[in-house]
Image (cartoon, rainbow, N blue to C red; front, side, top):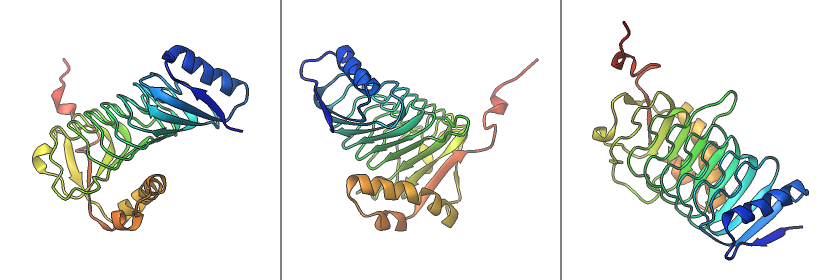
Length: 245
């Protein structure tokens, strides 16, 4: 049976307390209605729980999450998936800055656009591998300081080369896939284009297919297009920037 919580006029502290208490009591399917700006929703939740958020949550939804699946039917504020370790965060709208900040595992799907510094400090952690899939556009500094994981930028509806500045600024691990062309002038120092072939297309296929299952689009047409793959120039792309006596 689905448990419903009305978030109207609730401060985020009692709202999140109600969610944690419901999970502790054994509830595994919870719907939050009329969410408007409450922060830290699903913060630290663990286990096989499905949480549906109807409205616009505040910052850091899914922070430190380990296992649950969270559906957001609306836009999301800054840093959804912050330091997430496992689970799924599916946003039926756009999201703000720093999406998947320091994410260490799990999957974040954003139907539309994201703001600045998407995927900043993403890292692979032990056996975990984080994935960020964005259906629309991303602003500057996508993949900044990225140490691991995968970012897939589908740019649905756009045919112009990606040209936001600072792409993969400070990247030293992981990889970024951009549907279509990428303007060389937007690549940061230490980031390079790498070959994209059938092996890479096979690698992103499950991500594209899951994105399309969530948001009702055609995976075959997206997979048929060309992609640009971005990664660090070497295993230690910034080694020459430091000196020791």
